[in-house]
Image (tube, rainbow, N blue to C red):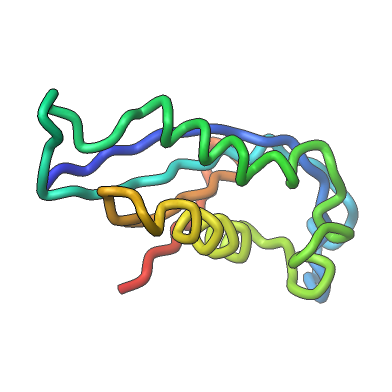
Length: 123
């Protein structure tokens, strides 16, 4: 099994609704996002999937979250813009984008700081 990953980032503001502490106030992060895919096969030139293409897809998915207030951006206008919910939302979008690709989406990990991250996988 081959596992590939790419990373991108976006800058956004958010406030955690219902949270008791500093994060209930509007604040910003440079969110780092890693997408992992798997494949059991390589193509005729020895690639499971083109890193450039995977990064292009991820960048397109993240573009709607860049430099916005996440609390005002669907689906986070309805659900809390936690790192956990961001990871799941990006996962679902990437799953749709990769539906016809020769790889399977493995997981999405989102860092809101160098020390704090949340990962979402369907297992």
